[in-house]
Length: 73
Image 1 (spheres, rainbow, N blue to C red):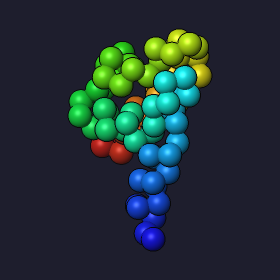
Image 2: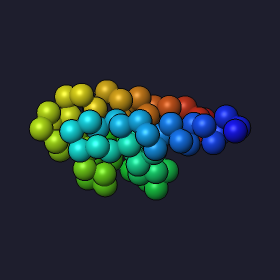
Image 3: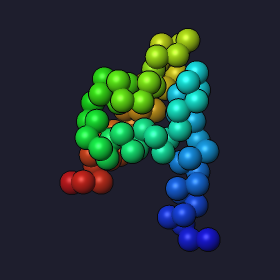
């Protein structure tokens, strides 16, 4: 398997928001579709609306946002 395919599989399996079971792939898709802030990602995916209210996933979501912004520059 090539590296891109491995990363896609890992993104689908890796949960960013553990409370709601939202994958890294779902977060990345939301970002690619224009959700460019934490609040927009939360509204689009439901991440951060679980029992911990984003205490576990907020940092991960911000990191994904920064990663995406840096890849576009």
